[in-house]
Image 1 (tube, rainbow, N blue to C red):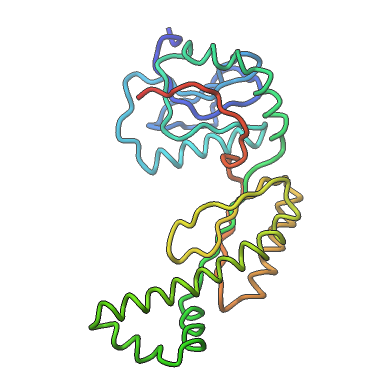
Image 2 (image 1 turned 180 degrees about the vertical axis):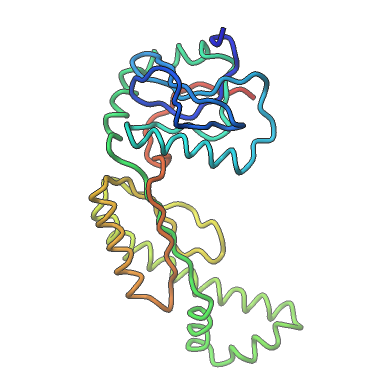
Length: 247
């Protein structure tokens, strides 16, 4: 009966069968590992179409992946993806079964770490004061004059961009040297100086964290680092299953 029910997708893992009793899926649904083509798809069976998935559901989606990652490799699937039935997955997964197995083997024992850095307001202000003797007066005028406020904003942007270039050209290579793979992502806010993602194993995670801590100690007045470990490896999956999720 379940074969014809709509399914919500979490990820793909080496072959397992049945209910994952230690996982709670989106909308409080149960999570199953359904074998297809020598791998398993992590799914929840839906009685009706899911609407208005929220932040809590996004957290549950990731928690499912993190729980399974404790036992085996996972190829994560984008949050909110659903298909009309398991049968809609059978053809694309069977067609890429060997590639999926190789990808899972490549990811085995590895997970993603995110390193983000944010500039401290005081550091930018101090840099502006050092570079521009008229900064104090410009700051005062900017309260009343839009053109002056624009000029002030351009100065801030210039300083922040220099900090960002320094982070990418010097700190990123230093952090990347102890990881399997790495990438830099787009800035998510005006305050962000650096947004790096790293594919690591447990030992590399420890080395990377030490390097981040050492870097943070070197620039205590400039940067605040945020280190997030044990993430599903979204940034490091090197294949596309080629199916279209249900609209």
